[in-house]
Image 1 (tube, rainbow, N blue to C red):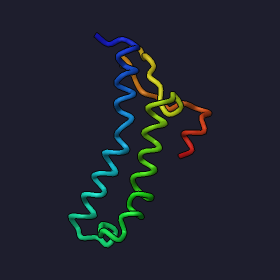
Image 2 (image 1 turned 120 degrees about the horizontal axis):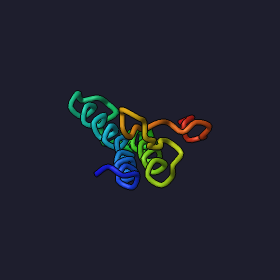
Image 3 (image 1 turned 90 degrees about the vertical axis):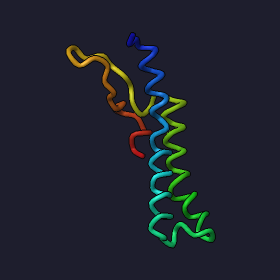
Image 4 (image 1 turned 180 degrees about the horizontal axis):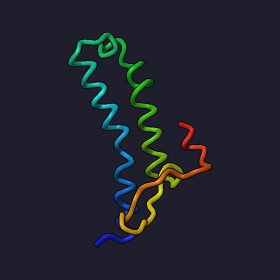
Length: 90
């Protein structure tokens, strides 16, 4: 059954999507033999891809500053961005 508590759990778990996108980007760079995927450039990949995605995931997991779940008639629970939050400036 969908309750606000369950929806909050789904919202917290969905905070890990930026990390999945970073891993996918890393896979594409390795598959295409891009210079960024070489071992000597690993620091650039970590700073440019994984650090921002980890930061966004942690903000989404630990705070309510990115999205919130609200109930809309005929649609059920929907995710909406939090207006006025500094985290949305990312």
